[in-house]
Length: 373
Ligand SMILES: [Zn+2]
Image (spheres, rainbow, N blue to C red):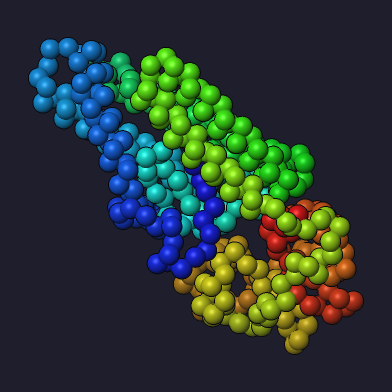
């Protein structure tokens, strides 16, 4: 799963639960204590059920040791799935706060929702695809003899389950995000797509409750309880996502409503090192207007500075690498959000300068429009 993490003070951050397990590629990994329950459950199932049935007549200690080892690999598989989400998010310049592994698998908390349906699609689908890949790899290793083979066959099955479960179209599962990306792409509205996908998520939760009832009547009480837990988790998150999209602006609202007025103006002769230190480090996904002798001449963002080796940031200046003004649409404060978005699409950019008459007055980011219409 990949989820949106609100910006809150570190001490009060509800996503920072559990123990800190380490860091991979700058992404903090945390483990919720509830994961221990899963590890124990998996170890128990394997040591007492699966392994003795598949490879009989070994000592109990061997079964338990192998069960614990397989459970550890299983948790590694979940981390692998979440890392896939995180890597794609980072590729689209969306910071990843942390990965938390817990009872229901894991969550990669990304700093904000993607700005384009295609980005959302790839970030969401990366998880199930990575689990499917693991399922194939473990499946191929399933022909190994004895316990290693039995462990690989179980891991193949569980990764396949993980991929398929996450592909269910209920928001906030990965499949729900894929659905939202599709609705967003074809319908054009992020908020509307979120509402529709949340409704499907709530419907999904209701189906799970129905299924739990059947399991309960059939005498599978433990499994029934499990489905009720997942259903309440799904329903809660889907409803929250729904509420977050209420309100908002219409497509006909003027661009003025979402304008960023207080953007720092960058001098064209500023070295990249100073640009990074003073401005970009605080807003890595922002674009900045560049002025020469008081006249707007271009824009610069991390995409341009990152193309220059860091060692040269002291002597390369902003106007050596900035994008010229001609790379951006000229937007006016009075035009509609819909037209502004169409212009951003036409120029294939995420930021643009905004004018009142001939006067530069501020900036607009694609996400300011996307999240609010
Ligand atoms: Zn996922």
